[in-house]
Image (cartoon, helix red, strand yellow):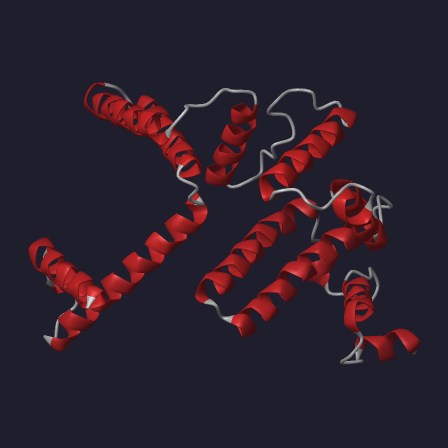
Length: 271
């Protein structure tokens, strides 16, 4: 069969992948697990694969990046096939929609506008085009269209960027740092005198302001936290290794010893 030949063609490219997904979702001959999935059940995998792409980039693991981009592409194909099965849209509709969007948002490349603009000017133009697109969707509020399903830290930054465009922002980072001190004090007070719900609220306020500080300092907070996670993992692994040299494990140690080993790991990293 022609379809089977395409599925087994190692150079089949995008048509091959689309055909594989159609076969997996076939009600008669497909995979029971793939057939059972819907948009909601697949969404967590989509988010996970995006983070794995980011992780491969951080590690500069280019073979891994190739594989992770494939996993992420599969998620797009999966969602598109579910949509096709429901009669909503096809994969080509997805590709054409983003192609049309790129043309509309780059008139300095595909239109007659000049290219001699700074990156900042092009960013402003980009945002103006997106504002028109949101208005066409009846998204007239400043914060309309910022996806609720984004990771909370990323959504915080996007909400703050939107508000900043209309002047609702601190003029410099020093004022944000002052606000962090204020929120930290309120969190301490809540922990000492209020209930868990108030503690969580104040903790959220502190995280939100920390995200704002990242924006003012031009730090990507997700990337910064991933780097901090990696550093913690690396240094704690060194603690385990140093304890292993003594024939012990962390649960056979105590905080004082492990803190000293942590400082040793820091010194070793700094050379």
